[in-house]
Structure formats: structure tokens, C-alpha cells
Image 1: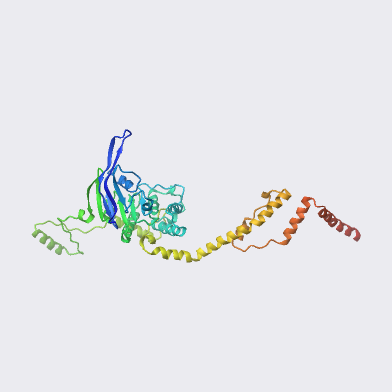
Image 2 (image 1 turned 90 degrees about the vertical axis):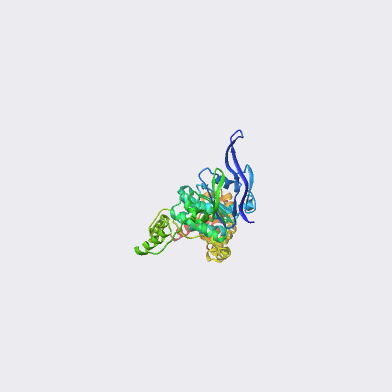
Length: 414
């Protein structure tokens, strides 16, 4: 397959209640996105970008035309399993925390428990939400919600990543982090389709772009070819003397051209990130998301999955956990017998089961220590109580004789 995404006269018309044509959201779109390419889909509001993405994913049916994604249709579950999607608005369950949210999406993709746990921790560390992972997602700011939304789009390690305004609400460090992640994913061989209004971000990461207006492609091509000004030349040197600058200007005038000499400037983004990084190195406290430069290993390495699973299986903590589970199951099976005896005793004596206090401490202790047999003395006490309550005459006579003997001994001594 030459293209990861391909459309054929893709059209979407929104009609009114009577079926009359209301607006052409997408009009005969012919789009080809190659594999292992970062492609930018640009355009003003209402140009058809989000509608195009929804038709690619099968969330909207086209009025006419067809689209192929990863060699199949967007409605195919096998194709969906290989796609990561970050919508323009993150639709998340408000009362789940970050870990529960990622675990939920990992279960939807059928990921094993060990793989889910490893990826969740790696993604939380990558998006800078590990310190607030136990907070409900509904309490997150918009930027933090975008971070957890990006993490859920990467939980299945997708072959195709579709991002709709991924940097909306993010601080400059988070924006730089998203751009670095996109470049890392492209190096690994993944395909990224990016929609954004922040043209500087698109310029930094995209190989090719297409600009939509009125549902139609106005222009497309490689970023460098579209932005390069072939009619001008730019020379960058180290610091030179004023005399050398005048000589350069004289040479330029002899070519009947104009030149301007000025010192280059850093981008504000670069200056901002350098300032905040310095503050982070000084360990200054913050209550917001912590921006890092870490990228999840499973997203940037080809054969890391097997080694991570081997480490998880051979880790001492895994063995300890499995041992505790086995011990708990063993205790549960063995503790069924005493429960049956207690029910029988309560029926005979007419006592309530709730009258006996539950030893919670003892139950927790049993899960970590071997079960010891009950002392013989407790069984004898239970038998005596049972005989008294059931009206055993022998038991009554024994009690009577036992109480009379000490009185007789006392009178004899007297």
C-alpha cells in the first residue's frame, strides 16, 4: 500500500430538515497521505478539516465518494485498532482519574494487564501528569485534559495517529513536547495527520501540507518548497567587524541589490522554554503539570516490548504479588469449614451471627502467615456451652456436683 490515507472525490453535504442542500462541508476532496509522513491539514474555521477527519474514521458517512485508511475502511474494527485519535475536544469520563482513564481505553483495545500497566506509567510520565494521576479528570484544566487525551490516543501504540488541534490549551513547553513526540514517532515509521491553527507548529514538524477553504484543497505540497523565497538569499555568519560589514554591503551594491544586516533573534518559544527549564532544575515547586522531555519507550523503540515484559515477569515485586494472591486463595478455601461450624452452632444456640465480633486484624494477618489449628480448649468450651443451652441433664448434674464439693470441703474444715 503506497498511501496510509487516500480519498476519492470525498464529499459531505449537510442538508436541512426538508432534505434541501444547506452547505458543502467537503467538496470532491482528493487527498493522499503517504506512509511514514507527517501531513498537515490546514484551513480557517469551517473549511472542512474536522468533517474530513470524521469521515476518514467512519464517524460521518460521506454524501458521495470514498476514503481508504491503512488499506481499509475506517469502520473496520481491525483498522480502528491501529489508529490513535485525539479529537478537538477531549471526551473523557469526569469521575475517573488519569490511571483509570488510560486503563479503560487499554481494555477497549484488549491489551494485557501487564502491558497496560507499563504503558500507563510511561505515558503519564511522558505527558507530565504522574504527580496528579489520582485526581479526577473532571478537575483538570483544559491543558491537562489535552495531555491525558494525547496519552489515550497513544495507549495502543498506533500505526496512524490523527491529531485535531493537539496543542490547544497547552503551555509552550507542552507544545514543544508534542512536536518532539511527533518527530520521534515519524522516525519510528508512523504516519501522523495533523490539524492545527498554530502554523508555526505545523511548519516545525510537517513534511507536506494541504490548505482547505470552502471544503476544497487550495494548494498542497512540501513545506520547504511552498515557503522558500527563491528570489532572495540569506547569509549567516559569526560576529564580524563593521569594516567587513561595509565591504559586504559594497559587494551587494555592485550586484544592484539591497541588503540588510542585523543580529539574529531567538524564537520566543525557545527563550521561554530555556527560562522554565532553569526553574525546574532548581526544583521550584509547582501545582500544575510537570513538563518533561521523556518519550515512552514503547513509542520510540521497535523491540522494547519483549524486554519490558521479561523484566515485569522476572521482577521480585511480581513474584511477591503472585505469592500473596495464592496465599489469599488458599486461606479462603480453608476458612470455609469454620464458617459452616459457626452457622450450625448459631442455629443450635439461637445466637445471632452478628453478636460475634469480626477480628479484622486476624484476617489480614492470615493472608501473610500460615494458618494454625484452633486450640483444643476452645472446642471444649464450645461443647460445655452447647450442653448447657440444649439442656443436657448430665451436664447439669456435673455442674451441680462441682459446685457442691467445695462447699462440703469448707464445712469439713470448719
